[in-house]
Amino acid sequence: MSQPLVAIHCIAYNQDKYIRETLEGFVMQKTNFPFVAIVHDDASTDNTAVIIREYAQKYPNIINPIYETENQYSKPGNPLGKIMMQAIEKTGAKYVAYCEGDDYWTDPLKLQKQVDFLENNPDYSLVCCNADNYIQTEKRLIKCQFIKKGTFDINYLIIQNNIVTCSTMLRKNLLNSYYKETTLHSSGLYFGDYQLWLYMSTLGKCMYLSDIMCVYRICPSGVSKMKHDAQRIKWMHSRLLVLDYYTNKYNVDDDAKVKAYFNFYRHWAFFAAYHRDKKVYERAKKFYSENRYFQTVTFFKFVKTFRYPKQLWAFIDRHNRISYHTTKSFEPK
Image (cartoon, rainbow, N blue to C red; front, side, top):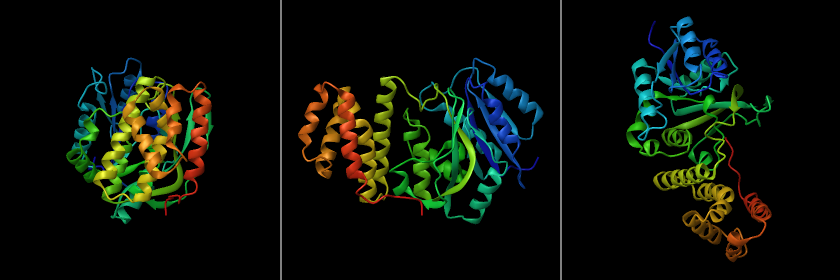
């Protein structure tokens, strides 16, 4: 087999109910170039590895499996990221596409369309597309809130992350620089791939294709569906750290900064106060005061003792939405 042009990055753990659909999305791809899928089983305790092995035997030129005997995701220092990066590096691929073990692709031309775009547009670092959502507990497919085709940069992405991981493809040489130049990816942050997309947006333009080419599966056990407050607190601090890092280090427009922090505090200010998180709570008060989202910041003094916290949060959210929608909205261009 000749050197692949694309390496698919796929991590799976206890996803035997879904991984077959994920792998089918890989092997059905129709391309005029070779590609491989690095499929990493992180010491699953169900039949995930068995299914991966079945596909690796049936499609040896596509499925390149890695089987762990100890879970790597739970270890400090991001060994899982290093393992995947080393495996991708060995392939010699020019591009990297992403798909987790519970998501799947629906368009057999996904890889071809995204490679064609990146080959013809060397000033772009990343390309993504629209995706439908599948709510596993309800067995219900939700058609995507359609986003038109357009170019975006960090000023758009810092405000709102509309990128679904299974929709992305990026240049592998830029991924190398991400692991060399940033430390956030190995700091134990609870923040998924968002910081990777942000980093890519600092190295080149990004394209959002309007095609619906994949499905993001919403499962109750996913990292992004956190139920426990301890998880949510860690996620909150991770997001704030990422916002601080990218708004301070890179050339983010002032308007985009305000909107980015507004979105953060709108979702987390009350949560921080309710859980006595002084750092986020005090920063939220300062932000609202400086940007005049409330007539008076003394309103925040009632947060910790308010009798009906849900009603209070609805009041805060309603006032913030009014202020937010009076400012310019960022969209892909």
